[in-house]
Length: 70
Image 1 (spheres, helix red, strand yellow):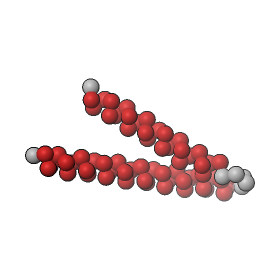
Image 2: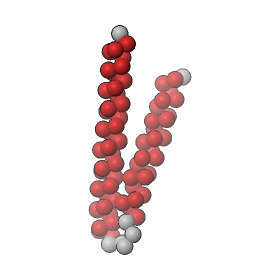
Image 3: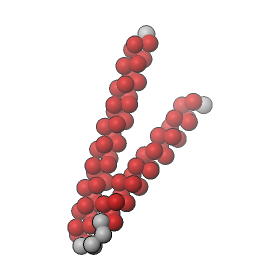
Image 4: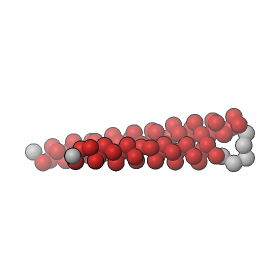
């Protein structure tokens, strides 16, 4: 029974990692497009959008983990 639980946990974390990877790729792509459209010398959106999306996803993860323990 514990082996199956371990497989479910591994699949859950693999799904979470995939979700983060795709989210960061999309944020980088949107930031790149926004910076290229604006023509700024500093890639502000390329830096900020992935950081904001990562902070938001970490906040959601902590909130979800706290909810599961209650």
